[in-house]
Length: 457
Image (cartoon, rainbow, N blue to C red; front, top):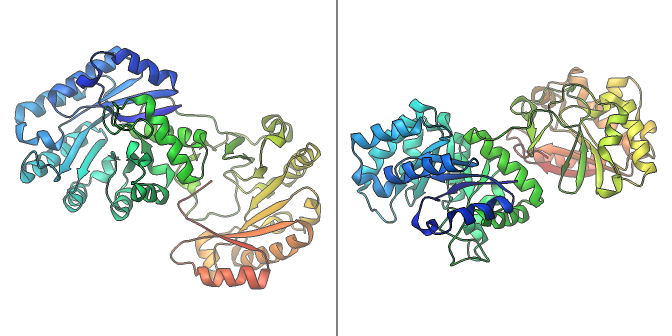
């Protein structure tokens, strides 16, 4: 299911067929729509629409084009309106120096005031910015708006602006522009920004995506944005739908969040098995310390699954490129489960990969790799440093500083029993990637891959 995180359903372009437009959205797997106000009247209409349609949520606010017409009474009325049921955000607000329909000083003061009102109401903000990069970022920083949270809608800035916005805590939303042939710069930005910080939108009735460009846009077309983003990110359409919908639900506080942790979850064409929350490392970059979700899947399990639970969750392993033991913990802690399930997967025509911190021999106080021979097709080991001291500082292994050299021995031993052995290193600033590459390729003689520290799954 998809969420159109920004539309203007109150506008006149929809006055003759609004119900048909909304039905087409529901029929095209759109779960929720955020309909966004741009002045007092459109905010009122957006709230009224949310009363008519269960899965439509409103935002209220003053667009920078309308800043010149705002007075104290406007904000008093909007404050009352914002307390209505289902109001999900304050917006759209911001700065527009392209058209300058309102004086710039007026735009800036109204932008600040609306951030402060949103903070008082604890509503995230929806930001419009066009050709106003420096002032937009400065005001957001000065007002500590990152603590409030929000989204840069229909993003059209540069990659540096996007990175700053994400670092401040904001989401970046992409519209139909991402599908335009000449919008290569926007696609490059989408490629660089973590998918966990991305929303999708239509900005209906504007900016219809290819192949509808030039026509009235509508929420059902948000699937074209999702399809393009999937291609950019190397993910499936279902991955994009799941992840961006979770992002929108998290930001706007709408819908039902997945509460039960998954023991089997699909990303792209691989099936991952999540068999424990326990790990022998406490890596300071690990996502488990900041969220329960990876690529839209809740991985915080309440109890460890049995081999039978996992086999039932897998179904037919031939449906997947590979079955991967990964999840929120270190899978080789549960060596017997890995062996039992891998045996079954191999007997039923599947392929097995294990993602590990390489401490399996330390955990079990013996060389476990002969036991994985014939059961595991590939093992990926996280090394994450060029020496024992740095590894200990970054990963805080339960086994102390000896863990690093034992991991290297594990990798060398794995080459004897497992067909494909690889090593990953996270690109933290303090890690010497050149030294790591030399260790992996020359000393250990296995495959090497650098992982972006903020990209998981």
